Image 1 (cartoon, rainbow, N blue to C red):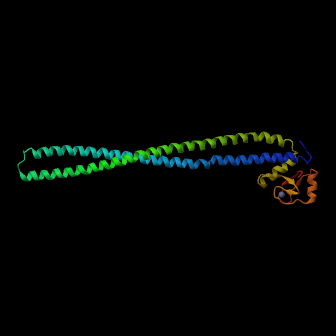
Image 2: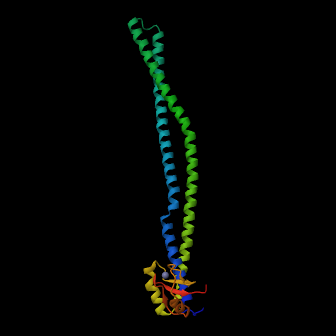
Image 3: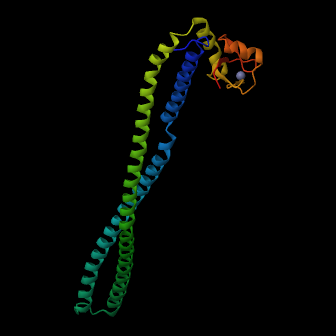
Length: 241
Ligand SMILES: [Zn+2]
């Protein structure tokens, strides 16, 4: 590799590796938070809640229907008994007969309202069936979408982690061939300048801050001397351009 600009070529490559590492670490942090998985997860949770409510309503209605049917059956049995007694001729007392008729009317009325309750419950149970089927079908779709999002996130995380694992070796190979004082200066500046300590100096412009570099510094940089931008303080690596 060329050392024509005082090892600056290698320094720029080291800077690339360091910037790559920083970008990968940012991406990994975002992947760990996984905002793209939140939305499908929320959808699944809210659909599960909808299915749960429908099932709960189904249980309540089934119980109501069973109760109304049982009560009505019991009253119909009672109604049969009263009916038989009324027309059996066993009772001759008109007052008693009148009481019995009124009782029969009342029982018939209660049976009617129990039948209505049972019918209402049955009707709602019928509309619940397709609603439940639809909610379950959508839930399955949303679960599949969540699995895909989680899978994509996990795959990208694995790729980013794998890429990060290659960094130390690549970094070591480059750092080892940079003059220690230059490397030390680079390491000193890097944390102070947003992770970027070495930049290209092309067409007389510092690529770190876009400020024009004075001719005297340009000349020094071209000779391979350690030159820093007067504006942003970064190490300037002269490149043809
Ligand atoms: Zn600069």
